[in-house]
Image (cartoon, rainbow, N blue to C red; front, side):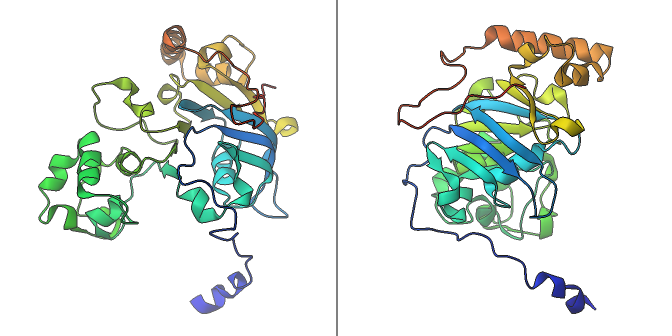
Length: 310
C-alpha cells in the first residue's frame, strides 16, 4: 500500500528555482550582516503564523543565542532564512535580498550543525567535500582544526574510507564539532539546540568567530549560550506569539526581572541561576562593543533595520 500512501504528495508545489537571473557576487556574503524586515512565516498557506512581522538585525561576526519555549519559533527563524517555505517580508544578507536569488546560491552559503552528528554513506572525503571544491590540504587542515586528523589517518583508507550508513563504523564520540563548516567557510553557522558546543579543546576561545561571519545558536540549555554577544528571546504568549519578546546582551536582559529570559534562568535552580548570572556579567564586562548598537545605513547604502525589543 506504500504507493497509495504517496498519492497525496504528487501535487505538491515545487520550491523556487535553484538559480535565477540575479546571481549574488562570487564573494558574497563577505560580512555576514543579516536583516529581517517585517518578516512573517508559516509552513503552509493555511497554517499558523510562527514568525510575525519580525524586524531584527544580526551583526557581522556576532554570536546570537535564540531562546524560547517549545513552539516559540526558534527553528522557524532559520527555516525562513533557508526559505524552506517562502516568507513574507524581506530578508537581506549583506544587502542582497534573499528572495531574489536561487535556492542553491542561498543555501550553499550557510551551514547548520544539527544536535545529533550525521555522516552520510560514502567516503570520508565526500562527507567533508561533497561538491569537490577543496584540496587535500584544505580537508586535512579542517580535520586538524577539530582534532580529528589523527582519527582519520588511522582509518584503513584514510580519506577514501567508505563510511557505513549513518557513519556506524566511525565513532560518534568525536563528531560533535563544525569540521565541515570550518573547512568550507560558510559565513553563517547555526548550531542545534541540543549541542553543548564542539567537543574538542581550542588554544584560543575566540577561534569560533574567526571562520564564521555569524553564529546563531538556538538552544534550551542556557549555559551554552549565556556568553553569546546577544540573545533573541522568542515570545510564546498568545497575544505575542510569533514575535520577539526581547533582544539584547544576556547581562542586560537579566536586569529585567519580569522578562522571559530572567524567569527561564531562575527556573534552572538557585545554584545554576547564580552561575548563569555571574557568567553573563563576566562576559558583559569583558566584551568590546560596536559604536553603533541599533543599526543605521550600512557602508553600501543598504538600510539596516533597527533591532526590536518589545
